[in-house]
Length: 291
Image (cartoon, rainbow, N blue to C red):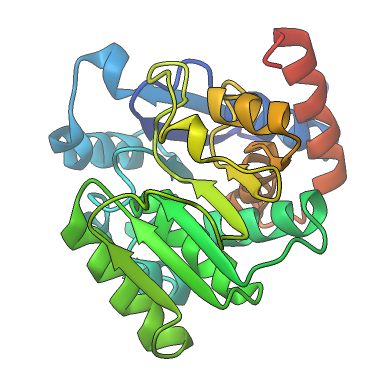
């Protein structure tokens, strides 16, 4: 008799409008390459007709079905925190969770977004100046990106959010960790980007379900570098406009891969091959014509 197959590791992603997510394929392919059985399910609030208020029920259901972990994305990265038993140091500092380990009846929240963005930035925009950066959006992904930018050596970070109180809270938390006046919240978008080195979009504007530009393309300048956290589509309207001007650009693919590698490590206890995951991601993007 052949040896029975080992039980599959059950994982998944909770978020809104995630039908196009490449996370399931990335995690399952890396597991298979390591000889592991892993099943990764999309739990799409949009498809299910649910809102963030369904999070308690969804977490309980995942526990009962034997899930070992979940990724968490928009709009749940902050709403999930009160439902957890424990937070990693990074998740607590950021006030956002993108990965939940389910272990022995306990829910442990982590954040691999900030390390994912930092690694993607180091590889995709080497040597990019970080003296003065404008960041749009300070939600779950935005707080992680802000930490990454200051951790990479950013000197002055200007934060804009349609929720000014959220931007103020993010700036205060960053200044407490990195030093006074490193981050500043503004209530309105600057009327000029003169003097800025870079621009990062951490809003949903530009996603397949939220098309468009997060600010007037007339504000862009060739000297700016422009970065996105969105990876579906990989080339957003913002990146397309920036490239047309000759700006250095960074798409959201690097963050998607390197945050997934961090989550895979937490789910499985195994070290992922990030380069293999990156190659698989690139192949999937090419096959789907995301560019």
